[in-house]
Length: 511
Image 1 (cartoon, rainbow, N blue to C red):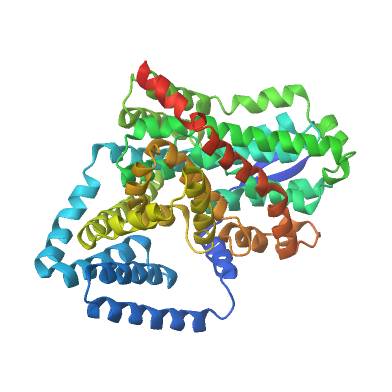
Image 2: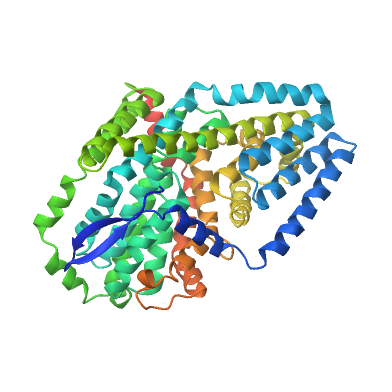
């Protein structure tokens, strides 16, 4: 989402609200602000570590050590800013060259790109990416935020509830946790602060708002996982529906209860102003601009669940409908120009993700040659952990990794290693996809280094966002600690009752 912020129009007493992702300049600025101080020193330290890893790889005398050095090299390459796809490819090719010679390196360079990108199941990916961009260009995502706040604003804690509902919807179609959080924060935090909400509630509702949405189709993270784990895309997408909706409803219920039990945290008293300024006619009118969104969801869910559409066909139909909607909504504002820009953005995003998948294919071959996956499985099984404690250990691992990597990077580094162990524990790969995507998203907001926490913190430094209320980094961390336990509780429920994620795909396959 690279479009400038768009005016939503007056609401709740004529106060304007804005929703939209940052421009390139703004987003680069906030990304830079989020980096730790002393970046040049950190950069040269990491470069030195890179060289140590490279020397270690080229001088290793065993397959296992070569594989471990290669993994260390790709991690440090990512940390100095090399794109994930290139980091995976560079380290894997060097590792294969050292272990198996130049022929193996040339072979992986010539065959891996075709193998990774020619999978029919992955053809749905550009469709979903295009759909998300077009929904942003058409203004539907902005209308979604306005509608959710108008419908839920009258409830105790209604603005936080509306922010959560909007976050779930935006996260499902945007494909970017950072972009969604930034856009939602720009719109939601100032609105809640205007109406007397506690600063920690305002921040926490934005950070927790997208956790469930990343599981709901069309979810790019779920499609990428399906490609990495070699599972069917259709069942994987359906598996995220119930958990994604359940997490969203859980947080909405939480804010409702907080609004009743702790009214001061939710600006109670000022909510009356919201009720007076937003009529039921306004609420129903807000739905008029969203008629295309449920239509797209019907095509996706209905086509996938009934088996009438393959995932690719469902994605193509939804993307086509998004094109029609974008042309209709922007018909007075250079529709063809916006469509052309969306196609270019989709092509760039698709190329970047497929580069990552190519790197993952190279990594898989390196792991096969060096035998690291087998060693990892043997080491895990030697611990004698039960299924429950094995998954609990993974929770700790992903929370730690979330301090440094985004969701896709975490999956690429771990899934190839974990698949054999998952088979030993008889863990469904479809269920694990839901588990690991949610876990990776939680890792991105967990203190002390969760990247989304710093994105929101730096966003709140802007006067237009903080509305004169001082919001410290400690406030951000406290807000996360207030709401994060409920996400962890849901993870444990998924471990105890895996049917939460598997029953819908099972029903679909049975039908």
